[in-house]
Image (cartoon, rainbow, N blue to C red; front, side):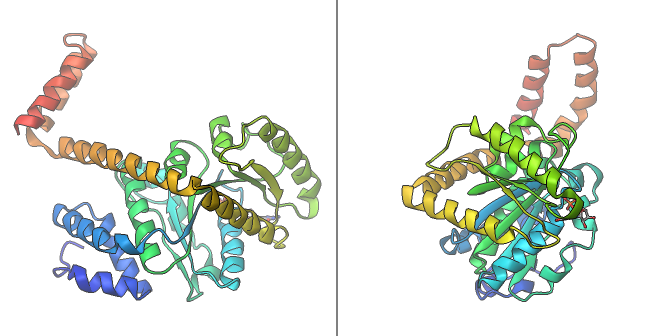
Length: 329
Ligand code: GDP
């Protein structure tokens, strides 16, 4: 985007609102940009579109690599599209932060869904901290809503912190599992199971079917011990992205959850809390960005790290030095 001409934010906002997918893609590129002038324009764009956001069912879908997320989200997306909805799929992929290349984005994924005019698929933003990636995905979600998408799936890999970030931006969190393997084998941490409003055991077909039933029963037992939240009791469903079995049931459950939390006021309370937390993570991320960019701070980092390692200065005192350098600069 470095050589892109100046952006007409009003025109872009109008084009996004008209549901133009290319405009939406451009708008998301703008919010993903880390350039200072782009950040200002992105903030202006999101602000202008804010009154037109909030209209989507926001669902997070997580699962270990190989659980079938891609295949399942495509099947679910097609089902939901056939039911008359407009579906957007976004991703939060922490590996894209570490390597600069995105696992979720590199594959040719969801080809069938991506060909549909009523669907929009966007890979994870790359680079920066997980917090930065999550922040840009949240903004992308708002832009999708302003563009008239009424279902947003946010996909993430079920291996760590990214689930917490995704759960903090959605109304319902779905954990997708493959049959057979236990939590540990699938790299799914117990805390992630606790985030789940819905556990879907995928691949309930052919040779996997019996194992899928077994896994579903195990998780049903585990979830049984967890407290129901906002009137919703987490549940376990069987599905096959390959045969389509149970895909409609997963969507029915998501809709049922949405109706329940809407009627109880829980959804609005949750979104309000998320917005407040979001403000504070904006503050944290922006401060961290400034800290990383500050020349005075940069010059101090290596010597201070050495002194901290050698025990010549306490970590707290070193942190104070960095922060006061930033404040002065
Ligand atoms: P992801 O890494 O979680 O996105 O998983 P993918 O969607 O790429 O799927 C991983 C593998 O599992 C692929 O070979 C899929 O064809 C296969 N797969 C996905 N869903 C199903 C299913 O419902 N049944 C069976 N038998 N295989 C599936």
